[in-house]
Amino acid sequence: MKNLIVFILIYVITLSWCQDETVFYCSDKRIDENMHDKEFPITCKSMNATESKNTGNWFPVVTRNSLEIRENRNKITKQTNEIKDFRDNTLQQSRHINNLLNENKEQDSEIRDLRKDFVKFKSMNSKLTEELDEQKQTNNEMKKAMERIEQKLTAVKNPQQVQFRNQGRPKTKTTTTSKPTPPPENCELKIGNICYFAVIHDNHDIVYDEAVDICKNRNADIGLIRDEESYNAIMKYLRKVERKGDTGILIWTGIRFDPMTRDVTPADSFIKWRPSSPAEYKDYTYVSLYDHSTERLLGMMNAPSSWNLRGVICEIKI
Image (cartoon, rainbow, N blue to C red; front, side, top):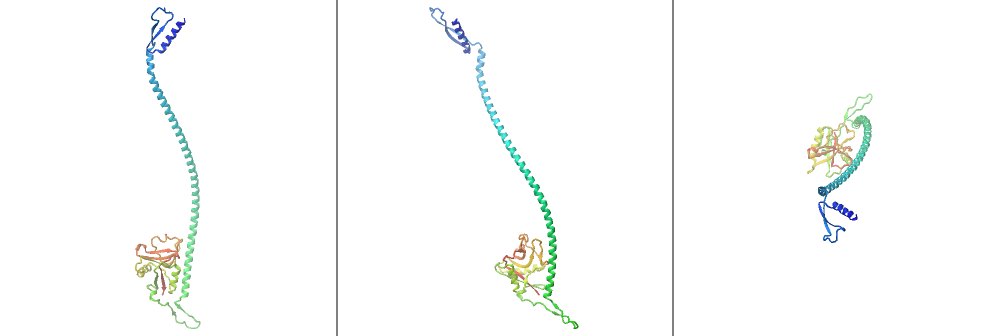
């Protein structure tokens, strides 16, 4: 019985091990000892050879599928990471957009406030402009009144005719007085009843107050320009008295200019601004005369009284 069981086990094992065909050598104790061959061969053939062959062919397929599965798993992991990164970037962009929206709201609020302030300042500016126009008109009227007073004072100080009346007596003869004719050096240019002359230094060393004193010391006043004809005549005269090698000279006149109101004093003065004046010097009120060899640079310009110029134009009424 034991031998039979051993045989069956051997048979089963051979069936499980054999794929095609295998030969085993077996022995049985019951065989007669006198027999020469105590072992005999047993041939073991696979019960399902086709199935074994197919099983052998499946191994590369399974291996390849395993590799593909591993690659697909890696791809899925990579895509998962990319999706996670994309989600993180989207969240960051969303936060940034929210911040920009909040900043935009704040800027809109500031712009609304600035617009309100602008409307308020615009209204204030309109009121100030109206007040300035009124003040300008008042100033013009005051200046005209002052000019009339000055003319009357001049007439009183320099009477041309003096009449004496005595009650019960006949009228006396009218006596006419006139200013003496100035020396030739103080009447180098005569326009109407006004003599002009220029005092020009080699260096720029004459401020406005010194220019006034220079004219006074010669019994003259600092010169005014009253019309375009006088302006052209004075410019032509300056070219004659300029020193050799001068390309241009800048001298003082007696004209004043108000940059705020753009009023000129005396009111009947003639102004011909050179290029960039008076916009270039917005706060300067004294008017100077600029004669230059270049035609387009000729004209008048406003200047501060502290500037050192080359000279002054003086005048004497005769």
